[in-house]
Structures are given as C-alpha cells and as structure tokens.
Image (cartoon, rainbow, N blue to C red; front, top):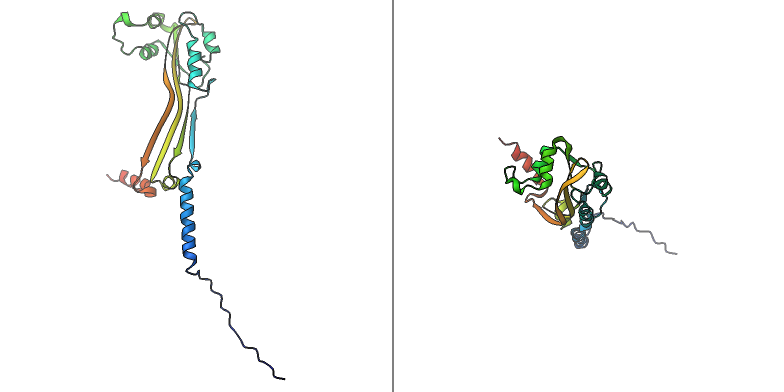
Length: 210
C-alpha cells in the first residue's frame, strides 16, 4: 500500500485592500457628502421671543386698538396686556422721555403737537409712558449643510413678527398712544467666507497686525 506524504502549503492572508474596493469607497463617500449637503434640517436655529400674551402681530394690534384716548384707564391697559408689569422688558418713561419718543422734532409748530403730548408736558411728573416691543423672531440656518459646516457659506433665514407700542398715562388715564411694527418678517442673510474653516484664524491674525 502506497502512502502519500502530505505536502506543506502556505496560505497567505493579505490585509491590504484590493484595488476593487477603492471605487466602492469613493462612491460611498460621495453619497455621504451629497446626503449631508441636502440635509438642511440638521442646521441649528435660534428663537428670540419676548414673552407676551399674544401669539402673533394681529392679536397684539387688536388689543392695542381697544385703548381709547381719555377714556381707557390704567387698570384697563393692564387687562389688555400692556400694563407696567407685563410684557417683560417694559420701559417706563418719564415726561422728557415721552416727549422725545412722541415728537419727531421738539421745535415743531405747537399747533401740530398732539393733545395728549401737550397734556403730558403740562402734567410734569404725573405723566408716565410705557414703551414695549413684544416680538417673536426665529433665526434658522438654511442652504448647503456641507458648506455651512465648513464655514464657506452660511445662509440665515429670519422669520417672525414685531410690535412696538407707546402708551402715555396722566393721572391713571391714557392721553396718548402710538404704535409701529412688522407684521411679517422674512429676511435672508448670507455670509461668505472664501477661506472656510481658516477664515476665523485669518481674521484674528489681521486684527493683530498693527
């Protein structure tokens, strides 16, 4: 009986990636970058809101319209949401500040000065103004996620509303009021940095140059 002697065969395992893997990895990388660039929802946002009893501009304007010169009392102003204690960030103005805020020019024709402002000037310390700016504004970064993360380009969309009111009270009775505001804010700001992530370092370096 013939016996066969086993032969020693060496099995070599190579850890080096084969050339066929490179196109696959490159394609995966490109897909990842394209996916990131399309995911604008991953960008951060900031919401700035002055706490108010109103959810939008129209509600604030409606409450303001309920105030009537020489009829509405300070207690009614409070119930409408414009009282001295709310909304937050309320500014209380003295007589001089009220006149400065209400008149475009202190040297204008006295005949054109509103009656309530004249009564405020006469009332001296008894005249008090309440200035407020309830608002709700959201800053949301939009655009290409990859360019944003690398700081090459950042687009910011600001949306919301802002309402400003001045109410002048003499002896607990409203004598004058005025308002201004923006019912619908939609502003796009674009910041471009040619150097991308190196832009901040270069800006700091330029500031240090005498």
